[in-house]
Length: 325
Ligand code: MTE
Image 1 (cartoon, rainbow, N blue to C red):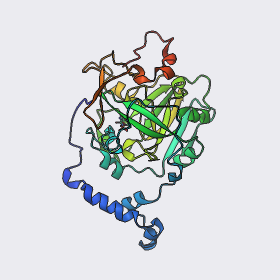
Image 2: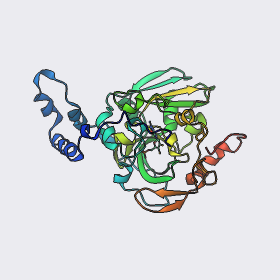
Image 3: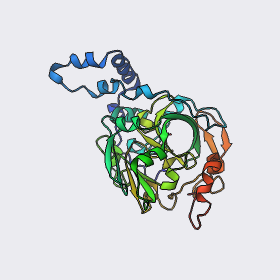
Image 4: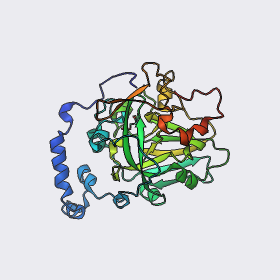
């Protein structure tokens, strides 16, 4: 997906915390009750970032969520270590190895989500309050990146249709635009002016109401790791992975089709629909097969990523649209 590879903003190796040190600090902090730790600090001093990270997650009781057995896989689950250490999250760098950066830098509490645009009454809501209003469950989904790798993971979260119902869109709203946070202090890559930050994606309201469209808040029976898009990200498994926007701060209902991040960055290669189709090549590579993450296996890619029974009908009447890019 790369368009340029400037490296000036990247953190020099010497400033990065070595993994062993980082893990040890976490292990130490995890062993201390947060209250005792806070009490040991002089006069209400703010907890350092690492200590805050060790504070208990207020949504932890929601996981592991009950699995919805309707969504079955045709392959083994990807090992957790692969799905959580091989990531695309351009805000933290163009390499796949951004998990430490995301864990250290992204602060997910407090986290406010705006629901606005063409809705009965626009509002903002804290993530911890939002999730308590939603029917949380676990689903096993495949994920197919446009770069021709794939994984199969247990997301937890809630159907996007439940969020649409909470939003109460006006009848004239046709699309939902979703945006990731914008904060170059947290995500240094957002200083790069040649990328159209913040990362933006869109779905039609009909797609969002499709039963497969899912807002993921957990992974492998735990709150979702920062590098996978905490505290909430989209999972639309019939589309290429770039549609599944991470760390969402707003859902805007609109009658105008949103322009997504990759469409703006490189419109000749990436479009709005981005439905998976092995017969339609990317301009620079074939989409016929996919590399299964954590293995050296190449398997054939399936149209709609194998989810045609759920979603093909959404597009049956559409004419003249580039549905597969
Ligand atoms: N969302 C944001 N905000 N930034 C990104 O760079 N990358 C996308 C998508 N969502 C991306 C994003 C791409 S290209 C893919 S394949 C998936 O996230 C990767 O999700 P994963 O890291 O959880 O596997």
